[in-house]
Image (tube, rainbow, N blue to C red; front, side, top):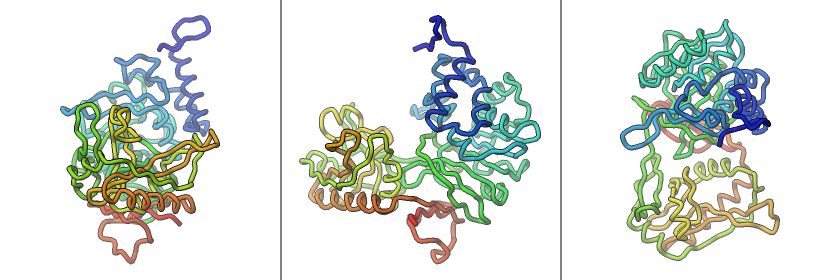
Length: 406
């Protein structure tokens, strides 16, 4: 629907920008005056000329610019809220040198506004189609302190290093050594890091050869391509057309899909935790805790029709944590309470061990309720266990990621 002003005429470009900025402030995504000013300045609609202008300025609207042969989105202009959130995490100051991995033009323009004429922005992408679009956008909008490079982001851009900030705008399953080595000591790396199926955009601070988290947010990004590509796989446990149910696997054991499909047809077994959340309170930190505490916890994704038919109680497109044990599984659910502003967390189990698995999930929900402040550190691959802090270790080719709950 086209945004209109009081005279019933379509809103102007600047009015759309001003409205977007106000919404970003209200959402808490844009907080600092310099970030607000940057978002008020960049004509982002010029990067998506085929889209309706008003939609390009909606805070949650991402503009998809390319898909692969399977229909997977492989390039996009991220939604304004996500861009603002990452830029706030990066804490960019005037005169800094910034590397953006995953180009598109718009985000590079925001970064250029923030570093100013004395700063430097390098934006890179593996796809020449994407970088050509970025060059066209930056040329049209007049940003001259941005260098656009077509190359695999796995290697960074050593020719322009070191960088005070590195912002990654594609989902990454690992952190290549180049990103750490090209970052100044005390510099910040902001990256959407996938950890056991769950992606969070994390602000890391470099401390020697390790990275220490300084805040994280829930997010969704297109996956990284090139040498560092590591996509999630999907194991279908119910494949009736239009109401598929599957498990998103990210280094999880291959499940017995046939047995789990049979379990899905058995009656539900429900266990409740007594733990409640406010209606507007996110469960993202809970989900991170669950993937830390439990071993075989892929994400269960289901089509809306599967929920409508009563096969599952949730149809989240991102997926709901599901604990798998042989031919049984349990997944997180909620129910209303006497307080209309709160809901109770629980688990639904299926299969021969459905009761046991549901109760295990509930026990960890209760443990999370007692201590739910996460801390994430990244160490080089090969770092001995006795040199790591206590916590869940996620091993990748380049790094060892540790999630702990001090």
